[in-house]
Image 1 (cartoon, one colour):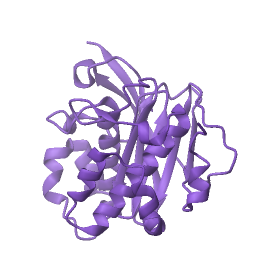
Image 2 (image 1 turned 120 degrees about the vertical axis):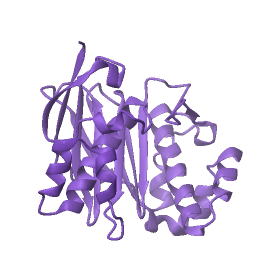
Image 3 (image 1 turned 180 degrees about the horizontal axis):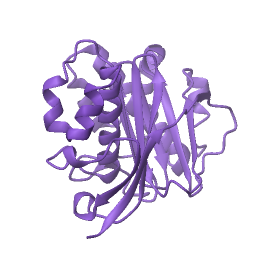
Length: 262
């Protein structure tokens, strides 16, 4: 039976301010994360709206709540600005394509892998030359997860949650690991989701489960108070990876510095 190796752990990824003059290029082992605190961009809504194309504008208008509409405008526009920084494309010329599981990609730049996740006040974007998936979740006080456990986790994972001092945080830690991994694979949440490993350590994953023989890493990280995240990407745990997180600045002057000059 063919198997892939998967390493799962916690990483103490610290956010740093995005500095002026940063070079927007990627090396083989770079995994770059961009963090967006959405409330900081509310005053930039009109400026960011201009970066959306007609399809994205229609999507924004379909949001019933204004807060959700504003969040979409912010994280979609900033995603396009970041993609423009790495591809040197004009932001208005960036059109996202979607695979059969609705994972976005750039047909014009298939070598550039990216993924986005958003939850409440945060959005987060991962960029790499490797296949990558990212997920963040707000640790909701109201969400009752107990009844979901049998459908999502195997027996060892359920016991880990049930025996944890902080059951809610442990649930979200394991959930985001599974979610980031299936997003990196380009899979949806299907019957295989329960069988995706999510506990710390080294795992062997059935080739038929993930449809390839590559090796993978998944790392949990604390994003902010009441927010957890996980990132999954290709590669062996023994290989060096440059895993960095940057806070996106909330002024148009600084954002415009990311946009390539034509």
